Image (tube, rainbow, N blue to C red; front, side, top):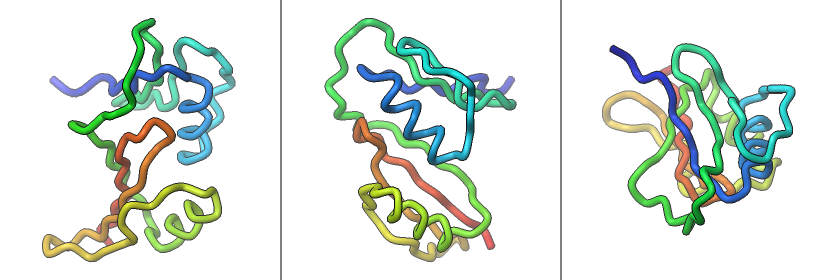
Length: 114
């Protein structure tokens, strides 16, 4: 068994999907305002509006992406105007992590193991 999909529920699919397309360097050829698949590898990342209002206080989840060069990604995110929570910081377990908010207030981590 494996996780087949992570879906971000939102009131504004285009805005959030555009953020993740820019963040991940993905062009999914979609401008749908109800459902967009951003990544479609082993675990899919989708952005979806299920028709219910969201409060954008997603306090019990986060997304983590492994990157090659976290310092380069940090500079790129600053240029995109992303609200950074924590700058790249070396962790005791060997990873270097940074965190930031997506447009709906979800916490996103970039991590590097190099």
